[in-house]
Length: 368
Image (cartoon, rainbow, N blue to C red):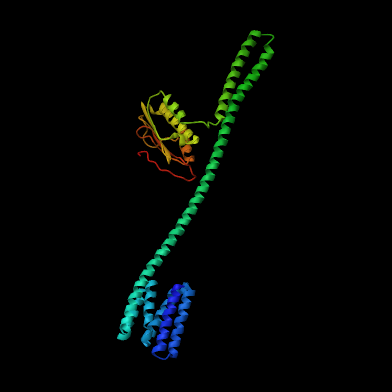
């Protein structure tokens, strides 16, 4: 809109000059009306801006050749061609300007220089504005995609937690059925057999009864163990990890911890505990290591756990067993990252963010 006002002011200035220096002819009226129509048309229908601009420049050049009073409009045309990147039309504008009388030439050259400067500057500002708008639109789309990805990840995590709970319940159900159920069924049959032989063979019945009592004791212990597995360990602290490491007697452990461990959540301490326990189990079963290095570092942003042994390791890819899968899944669901290597002994490094947010990602190299 501001550009439109500027063009109209230019046109009014030329009309005033026409009226001042000479009478307004029919041709002047037609040229003025054509310019006014094109200016208004270009302002309203920007889709055809360049085609209309070419027509506007041609009319200005033609008018300036017929009457030098129109020469100030050459500066307006030069501004337009540089702003719209139609620099080829600057040549005829300059050619017409050089044919003007000295009275109009000085002012026309001065106006052309100003128009050239403002045309280039305005175009650069416009391009910068367009680039910023495109960058903003792109950033907004990426932010929307990120929010959607975070929502999908949250839903996926919730589904995973649900499936993990369902899997655990199924495991316990199978354990109760296969072990406790069969054991109790066997004891029931044995009690029925004792009832039948009790009066005829008391010694045999008494021996069978003692055996049944022992099996009942084993069943009760199995039931207690299963119930204990179901009980959540909400009060876990760094002392659990310390006890785990201090009670490990298979080989020497160099253990180091730094930071405030009170700020670590119970769930993250549980992940640290079970992952270190799994790593130590790997030492006993597979690595034949003589020394293990464990370090736990906690700060306000994340907790870093480093576990490395000097065992035999393995060349190539690590075999993905149930233990390693569980380690990775625990860290992943907590919003952390993990790296595992087994080229020169077993090496595990994982990071857990202090303030877990869905979609948060941390990166850690095994060599860092």
